[in-house]
Image (cartoon, rainbow, N blue to C red; front, side):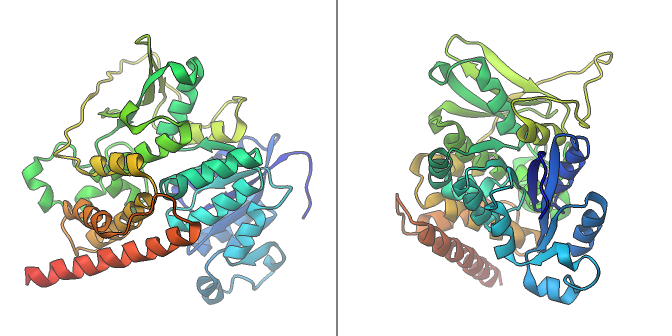
Length: 394
């Protein structure tokens, strides 16, 4: 592996929306950052294209079965290719890699986050699950190893920026903004009729299917409350959520004197991604800028807890901690999949998560092994619950 004096960046999950946006940002920062490694699980056609176009030192196919079917290690590029999660973890801990972009969705991204944190790296975090499932563990490792944890998602990046306007003890509350998702204007009594296509029509963002459904249920905001609790050390009772349909105000911090500091920008993930890569410096970014010659209305409204019952689950998990995060996260992943496959109605996504939380054996201080075990248990619990619902419906 050849290295130079440029900071080395590994992008895990490079074929996803965050990964693709990160590669776009890196194209404009070639005099400061060098792409060291990229990884993907299934989309090896796109990974191969990215390898040819962006020329990283390594391209990793993390699923061995898919790599074998695709012939990943055949051909002229094989010397710069690897297979398996172990190769990704090796890169995450490599002493010459400075920044790891955690763009892998779900529990699959947790181990690489922990390895990067153990190695004292800057972890640019787009993987919500790392903090939802193992927030105390991850933040403790980052602090102990002298690493950095910078959020990539727009809401936490906004809070990260706004917090620089005062000291932590001067913060009254964090205010997360939410678009309200694709079904925000549907009558509540009609939500059970919503199809997967309905839920996937997000008004503001182009995202993956799972996160788009999470936006519709507001589970994404429930997970962000949990994240904020661990990222910023703020109690959940001091974290609020408001509906902001334009997705221009990405989040706000209210200080004890009544001042509110907000971060605004057009909805483009490349801005928070670039900040996580270059902080504390700022450079010209490919993200869209405001056109100050045109008019723009900004508004927000209070959140209706009856429309978005998922949010209360987030507050509960943020308060209780322990094993509740892994159970909620795994249950939601499976419930969303069941909804997308037409097995359950839209409102039952949250109902499935509630059932898993109620039926698991709570542990306030779980080990990593226990978290992994409960991740499997929660997924099976929702599958079994779905089967019971389908059986009773017939």
